[in-house]
Image (tube, rainbow over all chains, first blue to last red; front, top):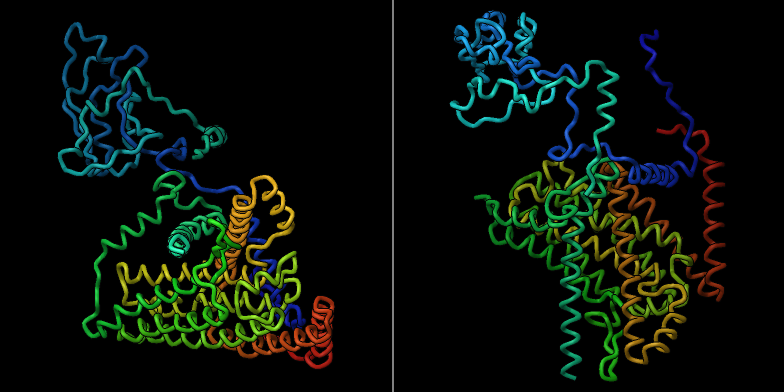
Length: 188
Length: 380
């Protein structure tokens, strides 16, 4: 009874003298390994050369600003509610007159903190946000930390820098592959 | 005379230094070649292209804990790796690395000691080498180490027989045991590999076994015997064991190149030598020609070291009974056949033709035999 298509018929014919000396087989094998000696290497040399993580990779948190540099976050708390790990906490404040160039809405987050020890990078905060303010970056890991006072990320680490605005540079698999192909091999 | 002794000392010192340097860099090249065969890059962090890797490895080994098991025989435990290293280094003494250097009208051979029993010296010392492994494995007081050591001993003894018989054919051809004479006999393209293809193959296989290299690395066999004879070893004592293996690899490559590939001979060396002497005068020209010969010899050695590594990353390890079968049932009879063919060739006076004819007849007979008697036998 045949259960799968993977079964292979074994060759039970007697070995010839040449086969029994194993020398042709050894020569063939050595030829194969020598061919691999000259083939292209699959190695990515990590610190110099980084693999493109993919458009939907969920990494470091970011609080986006809009085109005029105003913070989008209105401290509604939906991200904190959506967060299954309860990593996000915030304090809301009212926008004072003259701060219209800083905050987009009348309400804003005076403090916004993500506890990186709790965060599981599920991305539910992104989905919950009605103002498109909180994202998980696709190109940056949360860096390694060595003590507990480094793990609570405040607005200083989260709010977007207008000089280096974060944009997701690929949204589809094809765009991603194009970016991947642009990664230059490092030789030294 | 004094200067001659100083130059001799420098040559001995140089040969030792070169052996050790090459052995150190073999560890690096082993990793690079392994990586290349497996489509990856290999060590490239320590220094440019990772060239400082052997130094880093040695430094690491020196700073590891130097441990002697309580129930081990302490002195033999220490003596084992020392003996392995000593015997590995001693063999290089008789290998003629080059022709000769002219210095103030005197001719100084590029060879530590020129003795007329050169090949016997190599064999004597190599057969002592097994003591290093055996003593180390026994003194560890660990049954896995002892198994590894016993395997090493029986493997080395088994393969030394076939090796010795294939050497006898070489000795019959050159009628001398001196390695220098054997090399000089091969002058002008008369390399022994052309006369002794079967002997070369046997010798190559046997030297793989003698060096405990894959596919004959049963003494170590890390996944069957923990680590074999050096299970209990750590720090630089383990380092010496591994290092002596690499020295052995260098030396056996040198011996193969000497015995079968003409040592420092290369095609057209007489022409090059006369050209150099004509260009630079008797002394300098001769020395330059010698230097060129030494370089050619090292090229051959490096080729064989590469073959050692190439085979390591191609073939899987033998099963122990297969290893013994190959040694006793295949290589020893084959080497005796080779001996008979060589004897006939030497007697007939037409060495090249009769050697190849004898080999062809032997292969034909083997084929006829297998065709007539083993055809219906099912393969395993």
